[in-house]
Figure (cartoon, rainbow, N blue to C red):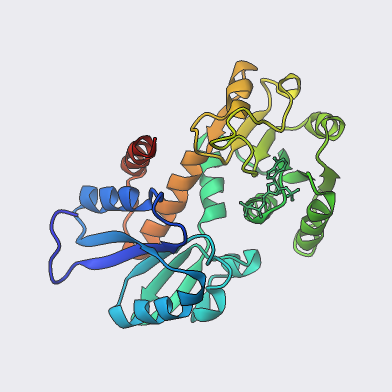
Length: 287
Ligand code: ATR
């Protein structure tokens, strides 16, 4: 933003904790680059204050919101409309306020898909191995299935992988398997796989030496996507690169989810590279 005026429109992010978010850096850089009279702020909103925060959003005419932990699910009944994808995923990370009508969207998983496609991988008919079965895995497996990929989900707690596969089987018919996360199962799953995705927090600071995939199972013909963005290159990505594989880091997913939200609020094409540079800089400041 260049200067705040009486006409400046406000966007922001709600969550708790929120002080480490990179979203204000990304969005304000994008507003500035496009000369848009918008400003983006971070708001720490406690769980019990969510309802009042949403009423306040309407009263103040805040144009758009990102939503992060712990509000992504709890916000859903407080909105006027839900995008079908957000409804299917059971989580909202973006709200658009149109004249007091609040619509909830999910740009997290579409952000993942954009990052994958931007690196040259079309998921249709690919065999994709997903590690993890939590909230992040849910969105990612849904968009991948929607895009026509065959999926194998491996999770430390096997019942969660089975539960996720069962939820998905209601919507999608193509190959869908669930397994316990073990070296033997990983080896089986990776035979003939095109892409491996880590949706868990394994390898994130401070546990930077942790990886769930033994290096001997990585190959040049399996692209590896790690949703962890801090560090930018996790041990998994480093070992995949050493095996000659294409690698995609979580920062691209983060920036794409922001870019897609930006486009919903402003109607302008998001300046992806500018947003990415701002996110990289913000991440460096964190250290
Ligand atoms: P999120 O919403 O970020 O996905 P989550 O719902 O808590 O968070 O899910 C975290 C996922 O990472 C789970 O699949 C979890 O495995 P469990 O279901 O067995 O708990 C997985 N995970 C986290 N740390 C892990 C580790 N050290 N080893 C294996 N899996 C791990």
